[in-house]
Amino acid sequence: MLPTRLIRSPDHLGRFLTIDQWESLRDYKEFMSQWKEEYEVLDRQCAELTEHEGCLGTFGVGLNDEE
Image (cartoon, rainbow, N blue to C red; front, side, top):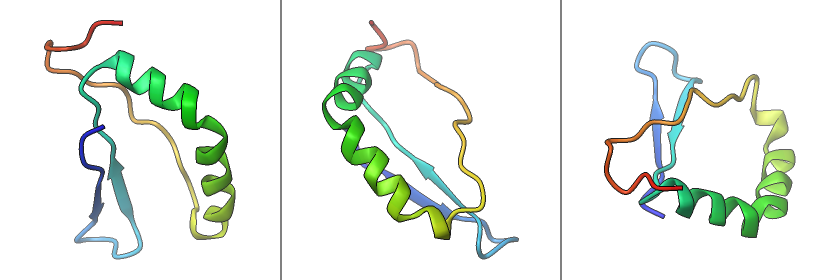
């Protein structure tokens, strides 16, 4: 996994965007398969800090995007 970035909105100080990056879609799927339960626990622990959470999409640059 590449670095995760946490970006704060300059217009809404309580609004953040998290960007997670992987080398490939396969790497992402393997990560989620291995760490899904831990990820869900973390989401529950942070629920009171979150008003809305959603996936904006999956994006790639055409390289290393094999399944």
